[in-house]
Image 1: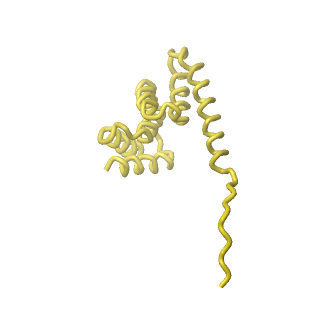
Image 2: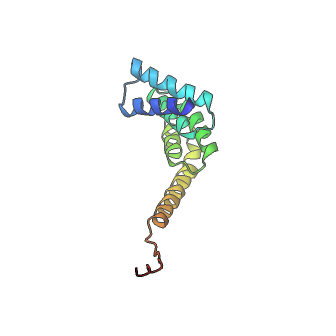
Image 3: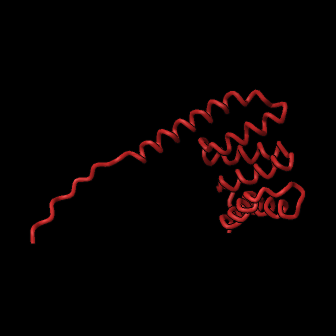
Length: 130
């Protein structure tokens, strides 16, 4: 199952394995399989992009970020990782637009969170005496 492979790779990544170790390779392979099985799983692309960044494969990281952003153009993680990856390359001309998109996505998320956290007045009818 692609989602379980994604979760496995994300859990391994949280342990911060060193690139080149068997644990790192296992996590990266799980993320690759998740992406192959379910290309629309944006979070798996994000995790794989991070593995590629840690392994120094910036072009592959950028490609995974682009794939994640196709699923969700406001994906803050993908935007941030793409900025990080592009800073390590000579393709820096995309960065200003990505920074604007990231700022807008952060503002939208903050606004949405504020909306969700607002108090709501709920009026219930009085209960009848018994």
